[in-house]
Structure formats: C-alpha cells, structure tokens
Image (cartoon, rainbow, N blue to C red; front, side, top):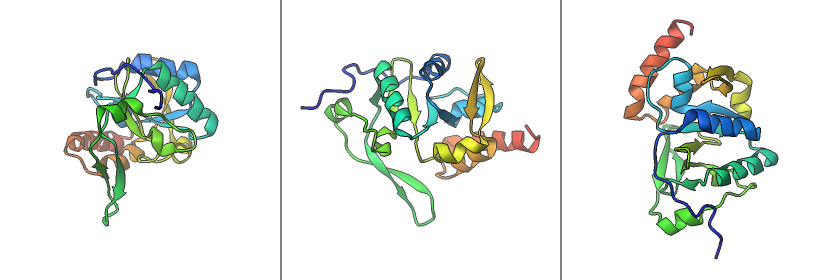
Length: 189
C-alpha cells in the first residue's frame, strides 16, 4: 500500500494568506498568484476562499512544491475528476465519486503536472494549485505584475488575465468580481 502523503486531514477553511505567502517565499517557489487574492491585490474587496497559485512547472520547482505540500500537511479537498473542453471552448470540471481513502492516498508526481491540479486543505487554510487552467506559469510570468500583498512583493496575474479566467468558465460567484475588475481596468488601475 502507498504511504499517505499526509496522515492529517485539516478542515476546509479560508487561507492564512500571509503565512502561506511567507512559506512559499521562504522556500523560493516561483509562482504567479491568480484568483481571489490576486483580485484583492488589484483593489477588489472580498474574502478569499483559498489562495490560488500557478507554479513554475520545471522539475526543481515541482520538487519544492512537493516539500511545501508536505510541510503544509496538504490533502486534496476532492472530489477527483478532470477538466473537459466544451464545444464552445469553455472548460468544465467533471467530478467523479472519490472516497476518503483516495484523498488520503493522493501523492503528486513530478513528471505529471496534472497530479498537482487540486484545491488542497492544509494547516494554513485552503490552497488551490492551478498549473494550466488559468494559463501556465510560462504564459503568465512575462505579464505578471509585482504587487504588495501584506507587505510581500508577489507576482500577480494582470487584470486582463484575471478577467479572461473569470469569464471562462462562467460561474455565478464571479459576476461581481468581473464587474469590479472591469471598473478598475477602466480607471487605469
């Protein structure tokens, strides 16, 4: 039997953004911030449900990410599944029934970037690793902006990238975020 990645199962909860960013910085992980915390960095007021990152996908970075996930006592929130592309071009998550045993037995593979594509419950709150869905690190890095988040200079996806990702796939919870980001974009912020 495969040894579990983490024997501890933490409850799903909002992220301790400062503590998570401090850990990622201390470990030297290259990533671009996307999602709700990126929207906050651009001036949107909201409470993040998780910290979304697009990590560098070179083997060294992924090994560092594995060490970070171990330190965080991370386990996928679940369920497992896959992203499919609709005929319209929109992506949709297709979940499959997933047992608690499968979640506990999860392990990442450096040579399989999709094995990292999960929202994780951790001791510091929820962390969402999105290696491709919002664009890859190589695609986002050249346009990313270094913004201060709780005093830390962090690479953040630009508003245009966030808007592109918040509108495909469309989710009801993103309607207000899209409107607020567009307003900031129009003001030139």
